[in-house]
Length: 305
Image 1: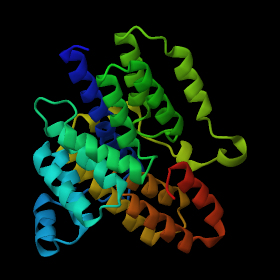
Image 2 (image 1 turned 30 degrees about the vertical axis):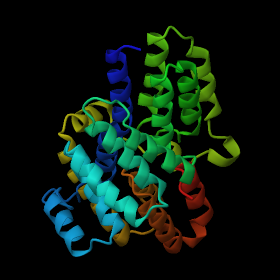
Image 3 (image 1 turned 60 degrees about the vertical axis):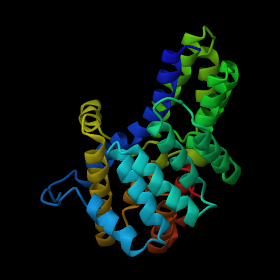
């Protein structure tokens, strides 16, 4: 594999998860701020970098704070600093898979020469050992196979990941595109396999019909998503956090809004905050005990357990 292919391959993987932020920004903005009661005066910088830096200085044992700092640094393109923050988080919570996979991705982005540095590879392997379903670790371990020349193995792993990807996930289209690109570069047939993988992830009618999590929420149109994608990553992160916070406030005022709770869970998953996603589920069930079965089904569709 040539150097250009390698660079494109890994960059594609980073974009796979990076574009999720723009998608959630557009979607949450569409849902949380759509309507006459939208608070346009609220600052989008709900969790500014300065506040996060102060937080980890005051509470250096707070893994969640280090995780948020890592995410914010990553969004600003400060990948080395992001890796440092994630390293601190993994030291505090060594059994949390998402921290290891985020750490590995930051190391990949910070690397100037090696498309998959040994320390990043070790982080992805640690993540997958803790959680075999971690999508970021699965993606980059497939990248490793591709870099080693096992293109068929990489595509097979990506197809399995696609089958496990919740319908409507922000990275869904980019994962499929990566599979197609690698197949084209290496002259491999993938169309029928991709079609089968897409069919396999159709939600059964008995369990998935009508679930908000699988796409029933009205979302942004193409123009809105494109506009969100044009924002600098740091601004995307800040505004997305602000909009999610606004959505949380709306749910405090109207806890019966089931679609709002699902959007909150989905947002937390996309922002790499599984603990907060689980808390959103817990709060939603507590506020709507009669809808507990539906809410748990929605959470299951999002991979929240």
